[in-house]
Image (cartoon, rainbow, N blue to C red):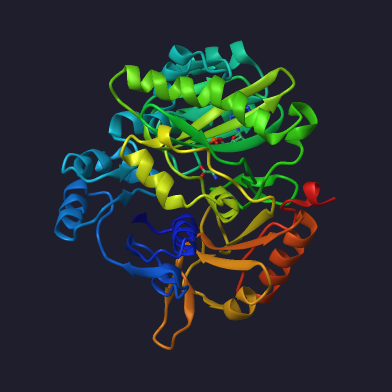
Length: 425
Ligand code: AMP
Ligand code: GLY
C-alpha cells in the first residue's frame, strides 16, 4: 500500500482484522503503522517514493507483491497505477486518465455531462474577465474552484465578490478555475468500489471540513466524520434506497462513461454529494478513499476488505455480493496541530496514547507522527491523529471518542467538539 495517513492506518487495521495472515507492506507509512502490533498478519513499512511509478513497479516485481493499493491522490494523478499495472500486477487505484476525475474539475464536469450526472451549474474561466462574468452570471454566494489538485484548499465559498475574485486570480496562475452555483444542504461522502465496469456501494459518511465548531474557520482536509447517516431515512425511507439512487444516477453512469472512453476506473470512486431541496448534486469526485471518512466506514465493514480490493483490481467485482456493514456506528475526531491548516507547528511530544487506546471501542490511528529515541511520539504534520470510536449508538461512540481524546496531550493542538453531535441527540 502506498500512503502515509490515518486513512492508510485504517486500511491496515481493517486488513489485519480479517485475521488471515496478510503480509502488508506500506510505503512510506507512518510511525503508527510501523508500530502496529495487532494480530492477524504482519505489517512492515518501507522507504519508497510513492509518486515514482518506476520505483514502485520495480519494488512490487522484486518483492512478489500480489496487490498494490494506492491510498492518496498524488500517485494516482501522477500515473503510478498505470506503470504498476503494465507489469501485470493488480492495482487498486485508477490510472492517470481516470484519476483526472479528481485531478481536474473541468474533466470531472465533462464526464458528468456525458453521463448525465446531476451536479451544480458551472462556468469555466481562463481569464479574470471570464471569471467576473461567471461570478455575475451565477450570483452570490460565490463558489470558486481551482481546476487541479490543491490539498483541500482549492475551493472558496464566500459572499464577498472581491475575495472570490482574489481566490480565482491566485489559481488562474496554475490553470483554469471553475465558478459553480452555490448548493445548499447536507453533505454526504459516499464510496463505491469499481472494477472498470461493475460498481458496489459502501455505507455513507459525513465529513466535517471546517476547522472550527459550528462549521466556522478555514476549510481543512477533514476534522471528523461519522457513519452511517440515520437522517437519510427521513427522506429516502432507508439508507439503502438513497445509496441505490446514487449508484444508479451517479456512480454507475460515471464508471460506464469512463469505460466507454477507454479509460476504465478501477479503484474507489468517492462521490462528494450535497442533498439539496431539489435533489442530490455531486460537488466533487475523488479517485481514492476519503480521509477521515475511511476511518468510520471501514470499522463497520463486515465483508473482508481484501476481497473487494482484489476483485476490483482483477475485473471480478460483478461476481461478489454487495459489501455488508454492521449496524454499529462509528465516530472519528481528528487531532490537529497548533496553526493547522494555515501553518501547523510540528515537532511536539504526544502523550496519553496508550490510555486513549484502552477506552472501550476506541482505536487511535496515526497520521503525522514519528518516534523518538526513547520510544515516545512526536508530531510531524497538520492532522496528527484520528481517534475513532465504534459503539451501538452515536451517544456512546461520541462519549468514548471524546473521553479518549481528553487523555491525549499535544501542546497547542485543537479538535472539534461537535462531531456527530446532531445525530447523537
Ligand atoms: P471540495 O474540495 O470540492 O470538497 O469542496 C470543499 C467544500 O466546499 C465542500 O465540502 C463544500 O462544503 C463546499 N462546496 C463545494 N462546492 C460547493 C457548492 N457548489 N455549493 C456549496 N458548497 C460547496
Ligand atoms: N475528507 C475529504 C477527502 O478525503 O477529500
